[in-house]
Length: 334
Image (cartoon, rainbow, N blue to C red):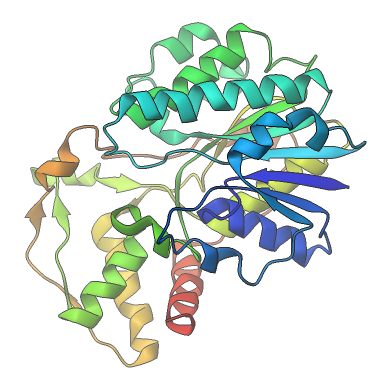
């Protein structure tokens, strides 16, 4: 089996390649670009791939890279910064480039798993689908999802494009995974988009105090929670989908199905940091910073009915387990 992984040096891409390596898979074409002072190279420094090519090289020679029998495409490359404001770049990279690559792949009968996002659900007023009544992921449902930022808009635009062109039906082997709030090893390069574990770790070391954000009233804060999923669990779902003999198709929620309040998540980081001799506490709550307010998702929780109905029975790690593993990685890779 041969794998082509785009976004290979990114957070989920590098973790997926690690999972492939752990399964003894090394026939991997890694696709990604680097900036002049990029630190993403650290994410792939301990991984084994057959070749590493730029996004431009892959775009020019997609047919050649996908010509091998039994090749699988895992499309994870994207601009994922929810505060990114260059609409032209978001459109080019997250829609136009992705559309061209996946259209070519489907034309060669290549099985594809691509990263959509739970960001497409916006404030959640239309739910998160995934139940038997919403298995078809109708255009009506997708078209009513409220995009709260350019990133979410670009992801939903591709989902709608795939749906209206029939790419998500049984005639093709295309699966889009709506990834919820993912965290884990290999995300240092994400800077201000790093997960809560990294940010809480830094605050505990710097001052011993974590200042949680506050949404508003006490009632509001009951719904100020997110479905945090450990990155290895996301990678296991991708691997399961891409290796199933039935070649699944459609859109899939990938979250734990449990929403954890921010304060509870931070308290678990504080407890886990004590293993390394650091003590911390929660400080006074502060309002959500203005730079994050527009387009910020206050509540997320996955409905995994569709994934479970297909037979995916692996247990997701608890947030406590995921935090411990993430902090172990951070502390051992300073």
